[in-house]
Image (cartoon, rainbow, N blue to C red; front, side, top):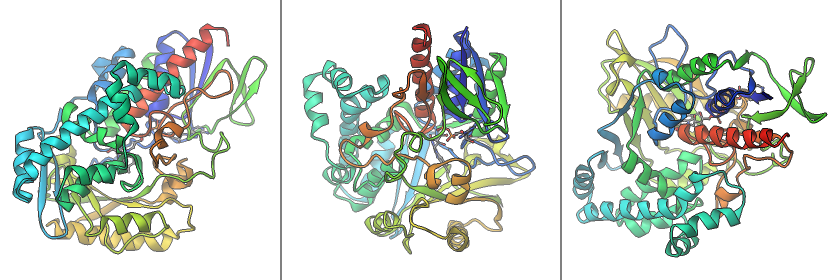
Length: 471
Ligand SMILES: Cc1cc2nc3c(=O)[nH]c(=O)nc-3n(C[C@H](O)[C@H](O)[C@H](O)COP(=O)(O)OP(=O)(O)OC[C@H]3O[C@@H](n4cnc5c(N)ncnc54)[C@H](O)[C@@H]3O)c2cc1C
């Protein structure tokens, strides 16, 4: 049995801690906050239940497999697949709906603009190819270098290697698929799942709509916070020692590491760091992915779909502003109303709403004490337009809050994967220091609930191998 420290109790760190404990190691998990789950939390007790961070779950099999590896399938909340995946409104009043059933999505696109029904079919077929060419090999194993990666691509066929090497930007992909500028925006928005711009991110991000089509869009019963709570129970059952409210640091020491609060560090054989790795790698000056402004509301009689997006008229101008450190006058809103699917998220005829707008991280000297109230007013005006009356503000998050919780300059996803080879420059899970590994949204394969759980799994695998080799 070896001693392993995990620093950070987000979903990536928790997954790594659980798997290493399951393999028989003595694991201590340090979390500087007062609960586990990191960004995946429900708003505090007493309020109507509403997630303050992630809301939409893709790749449910990754989560199921994660719980299975911890012998904790009995703890996993129900993952409910949405029939109606999203409702999108455009500036001119047109709408587009995505359904589990492709034919209904095709009909919605056709109603939006004649001919675009067939374009939707081609879009998803192309996106599936992108996933085979770039997505599967990227998610299959930890990224340890171009050679291993290209070997995994080539094993799927040399045609895919060729296809992968020719991918342009996501926006160019969207324009090649759709004539309708409305549907181009719909396709481009998937870059924001990594806090990136469709105009600069690779078309490899087309794997996201494919994943949503192929594996469904899911809701965790009770909210994403329930997933964090279930993982916390699984860790307790596996004997992981959790130290809440402890900010830990690490440094190489004897044959391993000294880890813990500065005043009380002890020896560990290996460390998995779930905090963002850019600073510890000396890469803190790199461009960062977007942050978000989040407003949490409690409202009566809400009749909204689960996931709704309202696009700005000029999406390109919105991104230009964001990467210049401004928020455009006309912005895109995302509204999540989980009670549309899950009655347990409704209390006494009231339900919670999460309203989110993309904003820049704190690298441009932005003053969120001034900007925050303006964004709050715009979000409130937006939900009134959607027909929501008497909404009460129950919470708010700005990049300042995300930064205080450890996100680099408040950037939700940290590393910015712009450019054709952007995703390959992401900090790797295995560090150059023997016995030190990273997990979470700042490392491979990237942010998002299933991906950080994958990173935790890969980190645990690599750490276990290195411990077996007597690190
Ligand atoms: C508003 C919002 C909406 C989102 N929407 C979605 C969505 O719909 N679907 C989706 O899949 N994803 C979404 N995401 C992204 C997703 O939430 C994250 O990618 C994921 O939860 C990050 O997990 P992580 O393992 O990187 O850890 P994090 O959640 O980043 O947690 C890291 C933890 O480490 C702790 N820590 C850091 N340094 C130390 C230290 N030195 N000592 C001790 N503890 C430390 C922090 O306190 C924190 O708890 C969203 C995120 C946000 C903020």
